[in-house]
Image (tube, rainbow, N blue to C red):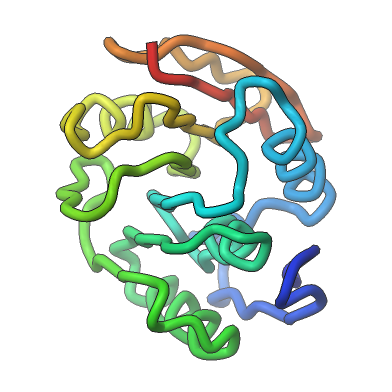
Length: 182
């Protein structure tokens, strides 16, 4: 697994052993970031403030930073994933642009600049991403904030209050659902 584009293009990322962390496939990440860079619903990546929930290796947030985001907060509770995440941040030499929260991503406590781009890749079939979005205070979100949720290919996402569905795509075993602020 590696960073696909931007200043860290080609940088190899480590993942913890076992199957508890399920990194987004490179082809799916490439397609997703192409959509983020070109879709009319997107706030764009330049200057974005990112929240990467259920971060795992941090591949989504690090890809966003590599492509022009200014800051990313990563939330992860699995110790092996946190170790890999911290190693990947160190490899990209971006510790000054990130904040790592070792905690429950389904109930994130966030205090920082207004979020413009949120990624949520929870364990499949838990509904944890919707719970996490519903838990974020409106004051933490930019008016044009977008949330991208990865689920199983047959798992539907019902937008929580304050969000609307703007795009859904499937990539093999995974589906990405894009929600925008209502």
